[in-house]
Amino acid sequence: MNKMLFNEWLKIKHSRLLYFSLVCIVFSPLALLLLMTILNSDPKYDPVTYLEYMSMILKFITSVVGLTLYNWMAAEMVSREFRLDTIKSQLTIPIARTDFLFLKLTTISIGMLFVTALSFILGVLISFGLDLVGLNFAITIKLFVVYLKSSFLMLPFTYFTVLLVLIFKQSFLPMIINVLILILTFAMGKFQIFAVFPWTAPTRIIFLASGQESSFSIGHSYYSIIALGLISMFLAYRQINRMEI
Image (cartoon, rainbow, N blue to C red; front, side, top):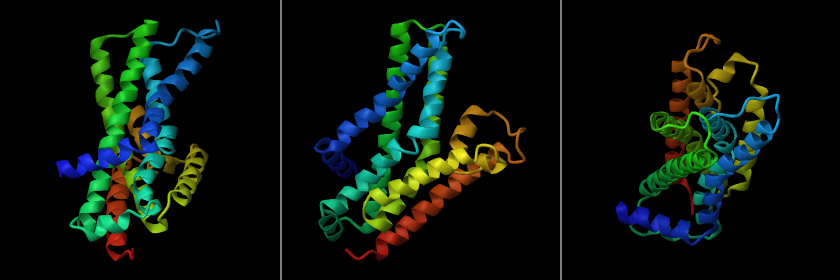
């Protein structure tokens, strides 16, 4: 397994995916840094604190970046095998189709955790450089745990993206579907089902400690995420095993 994961890393290292991963890492902290600078320049607003800045980054990741950039990264990891026509050799020598799928999902999961962790580190470094109010070690550790938790909550919709790529054998149409889901996500903001929609549930879980504002509990949000992940993995397993190369 370690050798196969290393081979996946070599594929990423020698492709545009590595550069795109760097974009994913810096996008949220730098985009929110610009917003924070604008807010701090307006005397009507109090200066943004460390906790507020890091929370802004996390919410942006779970509500926008995770649905777009993270999903594109996951889609590209699989679709490039079809685009470069390397999937034929991947599935005809000794790696089984199920192992190939599991390897891709594992690589995507590790990649997402890594990107989120580095985005967190960049946010902390920016906060330290700007000497934001409230920056301390105890809060930083708690925030790091929450950031990692958000990554695990976002993994199921990257698995859904992998399923779409296996169906369409390319990344363009799956990303169109993801963009439509993103639009639907914002449109559902005033409806209670927003709480259990798998693509919005991570943000709700992270930023709402209780479900009192909705007839759906936090537990329902977890169930929807888990259901999406399990269904996506099962259908991806069926799709790759009946796929004609």
